[in-house]
Length: 398
Image 1 (cartoon, helix red, strand yellow):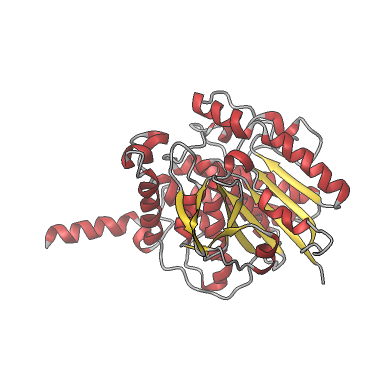
Image 2 (cartoon, rainbow, N blue to C red; image 1 turned 180 degrees about the vertical axis):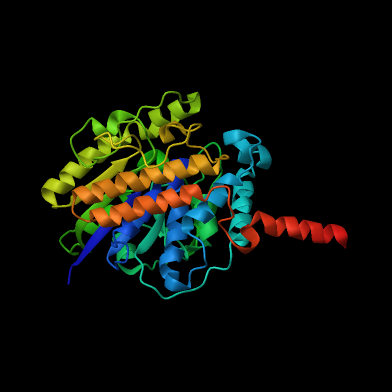
């Protein structure tokens, strides 16, 4: 029987993408459409961070600890060292070890989280995307290791070329932007003479769509793995209006133009973000015409219908102004980006009849309460500031 898949593509874009896509996943959860065995969530670069958190959250079900995935992400971005800005990992690792410095920081963050239970709840498949810079192949990580994203791998989730690693290592590899990070260099498990060099795939596929396409391929020998009933795209990589200039997938967002962006952001967008939306729209048009795929898309930027933003911060008025680096972000600023993702995606789902006004209202209330919780202790145990204060005082007395 040919399976009918639902795809979710979470774009890259550093912490900005991580926060925006966290809001997108919250909106999908509010619409009760994430608990689907035929759904595949593919994330690239910064989008891989909320993907890992939500995979654990959905898997644990009612056994999840008493905090939200958003809380864990806020802890990550707000605890990032400020020294060095976007180059802090390169400066700390003296470039040749910058990947290790970034990975160590991620591991410390993960260790601070209360123990995540191994639940048995329903979940979609969460994939993390990387690019082999030696061959141009796209590789996918699924819980245990990276493997080439072939048709057979997408069907069976097994490969003799799989490279075993942890989820945190996978995030470090997927966010290893060229020049700033070294990525992962190793050999194929069954062929020590072949080298694989995995890095961030965002420069060539910032929309996280390419590894999913083999599902639709077929030839004289093999039939397609399945059909794609619905494809949800989230573009947090480019706040420019390119994504709205072509009639196609993207609807509520994409109209916001940043008032000020840095030179490096300009370069990143010229090499990747700026060009890719046009390509994505062309590909979406082909898939819609010839494969019958229904697309739902959102992009960073103000709502097309002028809907008031759910989160307003006097110091941080435009999430699209946030640069794409992995540097410090205040919780207040981070929540505004999250809220924008949740607002845009829930609006797109509402227009497509996948969420009702009641569910969207509840989602807005949740995001408002989350924003109001900033400044209060939201996380238990070792993530609480009071925990460390009391521990320090105890050590001082002894």
